[in-house]
Amino acid sequence: MNGRIARLAQKPVLRKVASSSSAVSELVARYVAGHDVGELMPVLQSLTSKGLLVSVAYLGDRVSDLEQAAANERVYLDIVRRLGEDELVSGAELSLRFSRLGQRLGAEANQFALDSARRICRAANNAGVHVTVDMSDSASADAVLQNWGKLQQDFPATGITLQSALYRTHQDLHDLALPKHRIRICKGGYREDKKIAFRDPHEIDLAFVRDLRSLLGTQAEALIATHDPRMIAVAEELIRRTGRAPDSFEFQMLYGIRPWEQRRLADIGYRSRVLVPFGPGWYDYYTERLAERPAGLALFARSLIRKR
Ligand code: FDA
Image (cartoon, rainbow, N blue to C red):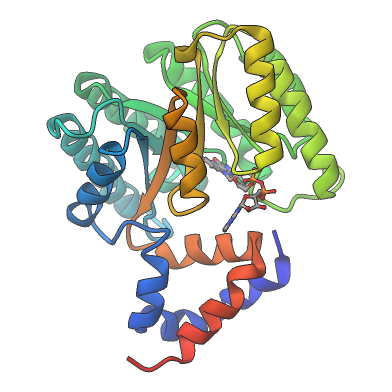
């Protein structure tokens, strides 16, 4: 991730101008499915009508107290209820972030986050919705993995995300990619210290290939989260070689990024899932994507100054 762009995006004035610009809203709508569940559902229906599976990520405001965490739990429960009721959206997944449930606010709040995640998983179980836990930066990796481990005792199908950029992931995969476990592997969206993580894109690619090989060689369910055409080609080759059953893996990509590739994978018979983000925290999500891929920066800058 480009640190300078990420820091610039945090300037309050930029956030204020972007939040009130309709040109920016139009641009962001390609990547974020609205502000509330009402706006989200038609986007999900449109994707599933094209043979795609969906995963929902709620972009809440930053959580600074337990009241906000409880409000986020209510949103997660509402999403699960709507997904369960909607016959047009089957096999959906919820991407759950412990930090949105207060996990980073201290030990007591972490317990609240875990209890809250249990209530969400119970509701998801009843509604036929999968749950996969997102991974934040490395500072909270141990806490997230511990919470996932506890959650998984009651809800074994709950997935976890691992990031190939971290040196520890190879060992984590070895320990966690057990039969029936649902493991999402991605490159990792955070720029970490070189003491604990690869930073060179080529090294991250090599680590991702190594992790793909090791994950696809296990009996865990493999969720392959990447847009990178080279990584997808490697995954397809490994799937062929290992003779993986079609329901034992899936490709996952973010809404609005390489949509034609998402469709291609579905058209040739693979499970292809689109992670669809929505909610009031769209600005941070969108600018994080820009920092990952600065090519979109010029368009964003033009939208900021365009009067509508
Ligand atoms: P890479 O960044 O090398 O991009 C490969 C190609 O994809 C680019 O050349 C371009 O064509 C396209 N592309 C990628 N990003 C783009 C963008 N923003 N705009 C336009 N094109 C773009 N991370 C994390 O730390 N914790 C998590 O829990 C998750 N969860 C997660 C779930 C899912 C379903 C996905 C797809 C991704 C995540 N990630 C994540 C993010 C992940 O770690 C990573 O940052 C992004 O997927 C980008 O990495 P790629 O593998 O796509 O490669």
